[in-house]
Image (tube, rainbow, N blue to C red; front, side, top):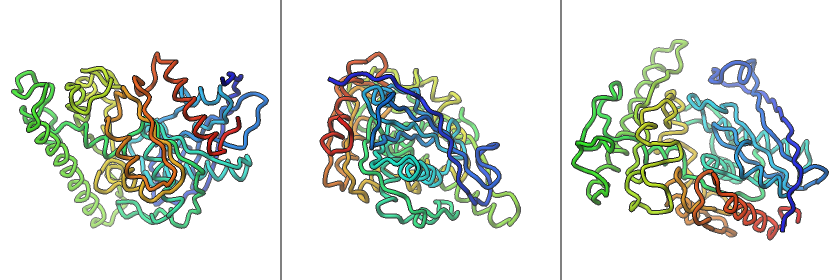
Length: 392
């Protein structure tokens, strides 16, 4: 039985030099040739530890989530690390997020003096953790998908001692490819749609439960739309480069990006999720709302984080390039992450020491599920203790 500890929260600020060709983060966070990062470190009062658990999401802050707080209450030292793009992913370059994560791990080792660092990749942080570890163990990236220099190969990224992939998807590109609305025919006019592919059109003859033929056509339409956008992005980038002016980037809107048949048909990749619902609420509303995935983006950001063919954060590929111990936790009623993703990542992973577990009934956020949160926390603690990565 683990005793809950009083937890102290500490604001953390890191700064390191950045030499990008232009600034894509607003204000002080990214100007003056420096990157400024902010994080929260949770430590049990009067309890030292030789291990730090690092949570990081490409675009969100995680200190309000129940999992890191529960681990800290159980005695662990936990860092909820924000990237330079926290709370705004419209211009996010994934390769630069990997550099941000590397700065935190270097600080944990060299300044704070932790002997071990464990990456805990929750939700969008899962593929981030896998991508980071693959580059730390086998560095290869020297440019972004848009061709801009970003030297991860020479950055001296420090590998983590273990990785936990919890309630996480394969990549932002994989997730978008499975939820984007293929009914959109004209990217500049979201009302110009193929009604036979519109899940939310009551006049659509294809209604849940969906036929296998419809699902196959729908998935093909999603992938085709993704690739049409990618082709347009590459054409625009080439045009800007050919002009040879100071205009280097352009922003655009991607309409209708939350229309997964699994939301309406619980027979597809079944788990314990609530039908007609998703982690952001009513999927029909979110499909057209301002918080949709990739709603506001830039040309470079699309290629770096959203293009399923170009992003270097592909969890399936990155997992084959890392060998650190790996724990994969699937939430059994996840209403955000597609059900097959956790097992697909686990099967692809080259780690000799890998473990797969399912928390039956757990939703994406463990909302109102304290007993399942405790189960997941106990699982994580035991797994780390078995590998001498957490103090008893």
